[in-house]
Length: 106
Image: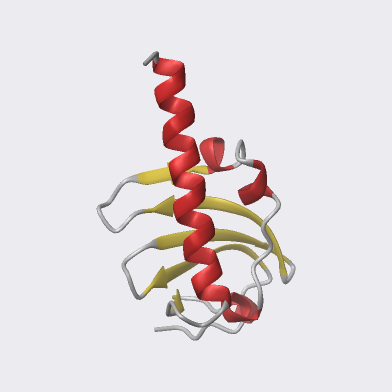
């Protein structure tokens, strides 16, 4: 397997893991809370979310609208930044629902 094929495979797995995680959050089967600032208390900027399974998801909030994923860190500590996440169309087009925007600060 070439380096490019390995990279594509890793991105596909990352996409699948994150979409499954986001689906669980959106349907209330995965807990999510905000760290430091809730969605509505920050006018614009990064909002850090933590999940009950140990993921960290950082979202740029643009005046109350989900703009983009800034970074995601796995429970094992592997971090993926905007440069990688923005290349995955389904993640680039994802818009968090009410479970995200109503997440309490913990």
